[in-house]
View 1 (cartoon, helix red, strand yellow):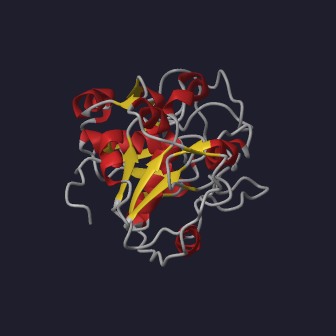
View 2 (cartoon, rainbow, N blue to C red; view 1 turned 45 degrees about the vertical axis):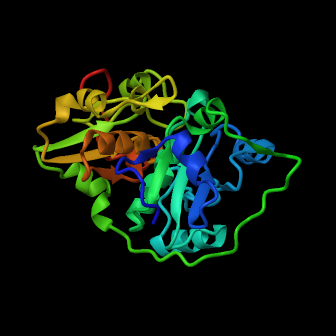
View 3 (cartoon, rainbow, N blue to C red; view 1 turned 135 degrees about the vertical axis):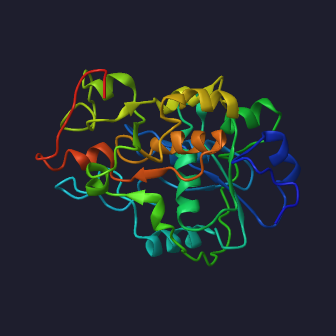
Length: 290
């Protein structure tokens, strides 16, 4: 492993520049646009960090969604299936993975989602590029573009060692103890039910507090530990923290922010709101209060 790897879940563009040629490094581009599923791949082909490989949210990092909505819009793949896909992309047990997207385009959570997935599979050698490709460019990092066809690394062996304690399902959310905090990571209008552009029902899970993941990034950079702790101050006494969003992806932004704040045992409701409302018997709350 690279000796000066920060303990933080983040690395800077300057750090990546110093280590970009290391043979055990894998840089992964996770840019994606929900409304244009092919846009991320096109952006990657147009310009990318040199040597980066591309991981597609829907083709590589999600299982196929079910017609009945169970599992949500971006279901968590079976660990062995995801491990095989990562290995096919050239990510192996021996690699330090640096993940990026583009916070200047309202992103940040795509990279955080892959960071979380790798850790869920037992692979702790993963960091997020703070500021994403925007920070890389601002720091003077060179880019590969469409004039150079991306060269995929050789397939590797990625061993899944899933940490099942990092996820919960709908039943566990419904039966959580009174000492557990449930965080809804979506924007306030989706939490309240005023606006719901993606799912058939608006609102939130009763008892959930709204902490928008996007408030963890300012000027394209993740807030430092003290500021992140302030964001989560209202649930600081919770014995258990469960995080959800619309489909289990943008919740990664809050999971990363909690890690920066020093909270390392928060759990993900992977199916999230899109799974919760797949059962019409489950209760729904609206408005600005839990």
